[in-house]
Image 1: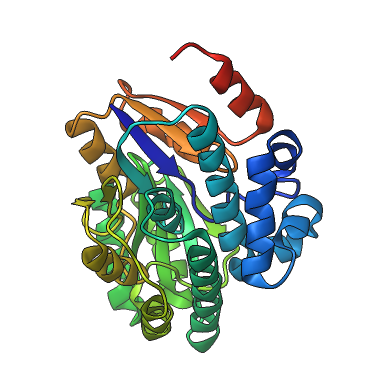
Image 2: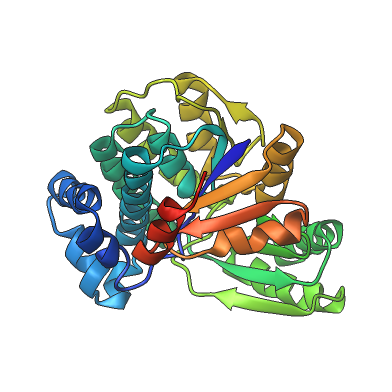
Length: 311
């Protein structure tokens, strides 16, 4: 059984997708469709930068989604996958639903563009930050966050459970800084502050929920052609109504990525294909389950090599 993985924000880089557009007409058409949907040249931003503009949340999110769907459309045209389950990391969940046909590409692009704007605005209204934590188990990290929240009279929670021994915390600036000290005391190997515009996947994003609801209300979602495992619940979602509810909850809830992959494995997925820029999720895969096999398809060379192989 095949599991489809779609990367999240942070995977973007200047030059992303250009080789795909040069090598595959369907990829070029996908980026042209993205330009038209957004009303500006996201393709030029992907291919030429500047990096600081591409990295902005409102730009990185549609850029990564467009790249992921460009790869998906190449596969659909040349070597269709029989996908049992899909999952996407945060933003990537929108890409997964788009690949599954729940969103039209233009709608998905406009939705994640708005999502990125709302996340930035939330970070401005209530400043927050995030930090990566390496080499500490989840229970110890959770305990440190609870203590930091109390001592700093603020909010800090685990926001991304990426793999065993690797998570990200999110919350009020003072509470996160307090948690960083407590996490080091608890034995974390490294605690790395992240350069982000807000406290993503925490209650500080609550003010973005209504805006995203309004955006989603403007689009028609269909039931996905294959189930998408929710970041929030780690349960497979097969209907549009539940998908909308959980995409809204995702803004303020932790990304339970490690559990999501484990759920896919428990449900019979043996081989994972990551579509989009970079190979972050493929890298996490072995840390989550050594028995899983995965490959990333993001460059023209990677896609061409995959297409040339015997099934």
